Image 1 (cartoon, helix red, strand yellow):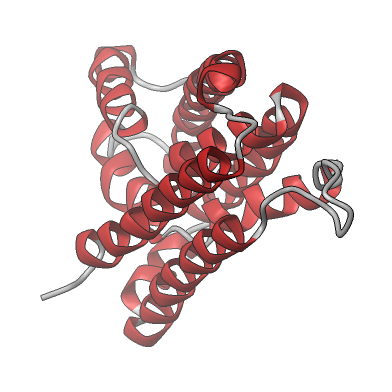
Image 2 (cartoon, helix red, strand yellow):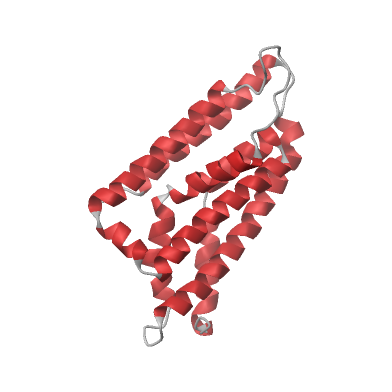
Length: 211
């Protein structure tokens, strides 16, 4: 059963506003794509999309609401997400991309990048809030919820993939402009990325607080 088309355009607008708002996914994708290139960024997008799919399926089967209603479980997810972003910030700060002999190290494996992208998204409680709090408002209460939620969720995922791919390609293309061969320049760029991730972690903690 397809979504109610009278609600489809407002839903797409809402999704665009949510996805274009800077957050953990966008911040990490920019860091990865700028430091390691387009292929690394694309691998991370796969992981981020897998994380979104988890929340979509949870919403379809009613599990997302349970997560948000159980206070300690929501708190655990929230602080795990904040801690993970802070760890990514620290990892970005300390890793200069060089081996012991001063040569450029290869980027992390695709599996590792996908795993990090997955965790960055699945540990973001705002994704759960989107599917549990926002998505039902764009469904017809007189029709079966699950098929509508699945259809709208797939639209959301498609839009997010397009935005994330665009971000990755733009960041990878801009990488030569922000990458410096001088050690001090590399350190400054690394510090900027680390501070950006730390700031996103603080924003996540603030924006997901309750009462």
